Amino acid sequence: MILRAAGYLLASILILTGCQGKEKSNIAFGPKELAIGIVLPETGQYAEIGRNAKQGIEFAIDEINRIGGVRGTVIKAVFIDDNSQPAKTAQAVSDLAEHNEVIAIIGGMTDELAFAGAIQANRRKLVFITPAAGAIGIPEIGPYIFRNRINYSVNAARLIEYLFQIEGKRTFGIIYPFNEYGVNMAEIAARRIRELGGILAGKESYTVDVYNFNSTIAKIGNRDLQVLFLPCYATELPGIAQQVYQSGLRTMLAGVNSWTNDGKVSRGSEFLEGAVYTTSFYVDSHNQNVMGFVQQYKQKFGATPDSLAAHCVDTVRLLAQCVYAGGFNRENIKNELQRIKDFPGLTGKTTFGNNRDAEKQLLFLTVNGGKIDKIQ
Image (cartoon, rainbow, N blue to C red; front, side, top):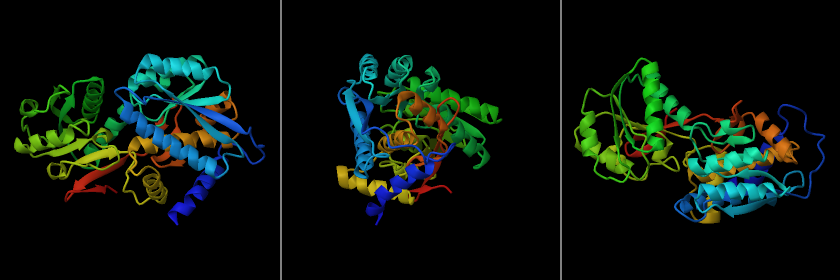
């Protein structure tokens, strides 16, 4: 039943949300075909990211065209491989801008790729929307740049607020990877801890290519910590959690969506009991929309969708929503995206704020008896 209902669900989403802000019922059918430019790292160091993104985009475009397109308009994807190189991202955006049928670009699968593509797209007055990059300042490049994910700043700040206000935690330590992402996350969290009147007992970094974290953990020490914030990656999490436990430090571990790709922690859960972390996409959600998507995605690709795939599906659906509302050209796509309010996506209800950053509700998950539970 979930599978049969999926197409009707998508159609109803487009119809219901297409009427927001102003009456859309009298809009005529659009052109036979419109194109979305897709700039992905299909080769190079981010090829795995590119593959997951491409599968999400293909899934969404296939489902739209399977129900007859949007008001009779078929959506076509024009894929360009940026080879995981910012210069090639910029060139791909420039090339796509020359084709009038391309009404928007989805790209920027890392922060550096997003900055490169966004600068060029804004110059060409072409919507560029990233479903992946979280760095501060990307949408601020200009009025044609949008982000369909919660940025780093909001993610870290909301986690600290939850731990402080709901869990009653006051004393924090931070261990973070020494790279642009880790430094930014640590600084945002530290600032919010101080603003709330909490105590930052220690803040230590580690080099991302090491696997022994004992010296870093020792610098933090016990210090009566109530929370140890770890804005680390999913690959690092099991080792850090195990070494924290073996050090004798008994405190709540906390993290953000870099801990996991699909909302679940695959390894090291025995050392993460009681941990709290954030996500925008939870693959085991009981939401009917998410359940139907996960089931169909597994059938299509033989794999479980990750958070990036879900964000890419939502991004395509958002652009389809804009076409439904009459966004048959680049300027109208920009204006309709800005009007989006509470779009019911796989990654939560989405609204674009005045700075074109997506506003979504974060999910808070915890490890309970080795299982991942959503915190109500």
